[in-house]
Image 1 (tube, rainbow, N blue to C red):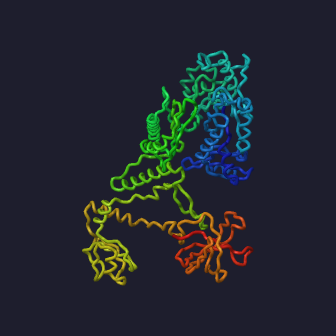
Image 2 (tube, rainbow, N blue to C red):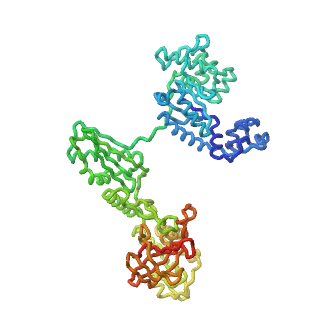
Image 3 (cartoon, rainbow, N blue to C red):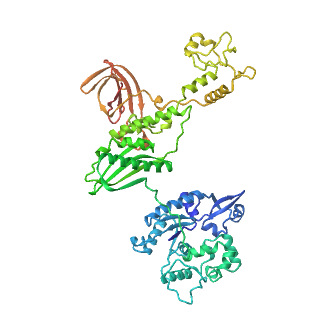
Length: 628
């Protein structure tokens, strides 16, 4: 089956950008060929205005000044056809995008929708509902379906090949066929009858070949059929293969879209297994097979599930998860070893299977001798620790908090996997050897003295830098103690006359240091930008009874859990308004005024007043958290 999508580029442009042009306004999509912009697609009004494909834009505007233009997007068009091919898998699992439509192999699938007519009608109706005009043809060969779909009013089914002897065209003499039976030869003759009146372009031949055939007076497929095969093969090498595919004389393969092969491996046993050591050995063998395949495909698994099929029909299984993509069988086997004793073999196990349900790309990593070894090793060790904890306490029980863009305290953080964005969270630090080499190669001290307003920089201890002051590489405390703040000034940039000559190795280290200093400093952490908060908040704020001197003053004392806490210090208020863009209810739009208070017993609390005095509802006080 072939589904033709006429002028699909223009249809896609209209659907994605409905305001691009009005319905009866001429629209053209442009492509750039060298320095000239030409028309790649036209809509109906543009064709009626006299425009044609591959026309230069300047000529088109001269003919139709009101022409609306936009750039063609072949990549988006190809992606859209692929998406439609995936959508069409509701009719058959064998679908593929074509240059101007869709390929569908509906062998053995038509009866699920009634018959071939109902299948084609349902497919075309669904496409038209989405605003995509389409035509379809069903034929024994893909080439015949392609040719017939371009000349169908809606759909064509090439199923009746009862042709009379006088009307059928002459087949090429001496042709072999894929059809060995008499019925197959009748099908071949029927296809030739259907294709005979169609133009030669419908055989999917090159434009240049079709042009030469037309110059020779061969306009239709029926004009080509009676000609000697040897002459056609010598003059037009690409014609006969396409003709043979359309008539079924040669097979045609279509690269259909296929679902990704599941990441699973299976083993069957001649004799049932029941011993625990046999179950462990089978699991290790399955892991080796799966991890070798993951390594070939540069993938890593996040969830591994092993299943054991018993002779009585029962299935026993266990699953483990990893914090980072992994394909190390030893590491995954270490996680399975704690759960395999829970497997009940029953009367024996006759087959086993392992399945990686979550897989992500994992490139091979090579640790740097100088920088990468310690950081990557620490990250791997941390991932192994998290894997052990999660598989013991349960998936999702180990997590970390991350800031979220919200001023509401209970919404200001979110739970994330423990190693989410691991590369950014765990930066690889420089090795001590490299740090010592850079310090030795860079003979000036860069520090910030406490109490001084400028940085102290010295290009070399042997060169005078500041009058009356000799700076040597030392600690910031020593510099702060010896140099008064008033005598510190920023030095001028070094000139070529007093530059220090460094050995080649040290010069390279110095260059690395200078390039590192030129990079902008990292901004403050999102946690540092927040005001002081308790480490942990109550899941639900606790109502409290508060006594305050004035309506807008901080509390003097409050009662919580039948205990009165007298306040000796208070800081606030910190006003937090509701997030109006979330469409909250009226009772959730109250303003909060937060106070940090300290009781006479030294306990610190975080309380807030919800609402304002004089409003529709009286304000209420809550305790949201306790400072450590």
